[in-house]
Length: 563
Image 1 (cartoon, rainbow, N blue to C red):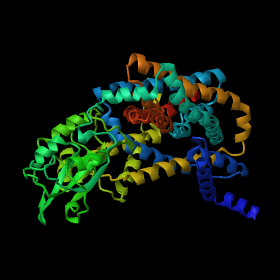
Image 2: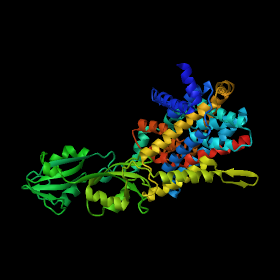
Image 3: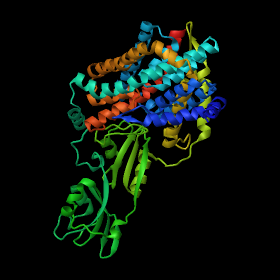
Image 4: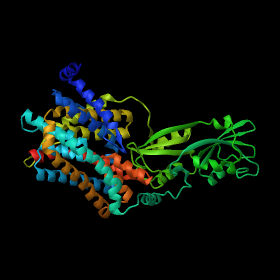
């Protein structure tokens, strides 16, 4: 049986690829406290183990899977990347540049100290910074080197080994640094700092129902009490006193009256209302007794995700957007959440919105549709992807990556990974403004990214071959030390530059540090400890910028070390 399996793996290497993926994902899910290895590192490690039997895996598979991953990253980051190139986010862009430049310098410094070859050096950067894109673009650069196939295979093998050795500390080290060390270095209490920033962003204005944080919407029916607060008041006047509700329907003597702001409420009327959950306890005091009334509760309602694309509203605060779209009429709509690149933003009056943000609204159907027209477009929950556009984007990006030029005597080219990333950024940005072209639903983006990167890691591990562990023994200690330096030093420099030069608020700065190293786990740690979503404000911009800058580092490392 064992011989049969080994023979199958050797003769049909695609079986080995999928086996490494499956086992790697299972291993990556195992948690030690709050830490887990992750599917990519797990697949790479399993690839290294399975690869010890000696396999001939087509090297082209590695490029195919990496293109899938880098395209998904670029498509998702496109709107945020181009949207961040403005004065309002300049400080965050600068922070990303500082961190990435320091990271590149740290990698090259470790190379100078320990005399690693180009493969070890690129893998060191990819693992210590937990950015597998470096390894992908470096692979393209290695393929362009004027060396024989055996030398290229050795460099790729060394890159996989360095990545495997440095990735563990890269992940844990960054979580510990951002979540524990950085706040202590700045003398910051996370909960107090989060509350301070929330106050700056307008949390004190809780009377504004459109922007109350952590909004949850309920529907209730109440009978207007005689001589109560609502008895004898017009709906518009009653709502002006209580911004946390809207009256959607009135049933009077069996007659259904749909919303009319000028209607005067009378004792005995049954009203159907939208209300914020925190207002439920006082609805009886404001209106009268709660009752179960099917007619009053059956008014039309809708929940929709609206993608912000209106140029006039991008860059405005939530308060300013509300004032612009609401006018004098109550909309009967409430915000459930605002997400940016899949991460929830704090629902605070002074939170700045940008193009591509997704606003989830619940409320009156007509108002939802009208708001969608003013804000941008309703995101349709379709499973269909525009495969033709995306595959063509991969083709054009690959061709772009093969173009080269010279700066003096230095040859310059993006490489296939860099070219595909640029093409995906542009297509993602264009799709955010013209959704009918280049559709790629979030689930499809995740599948492209997760499967592409995990399969890439598995193939890299398999290709490393039997020589992997010998090289690991030879360079393991130096790589561990170097990895710790490359993980911590860039974040340390960016921490002090961000706080004392750029003057960023600590909560935004901590989120930005996580984003600049493209590591969401450390941001989630800050969110958990502070009880606030405010770090997301700094995370998304830096994540988009660093995804591009770190990918570019791969070919630079290979050229400097091997050139």
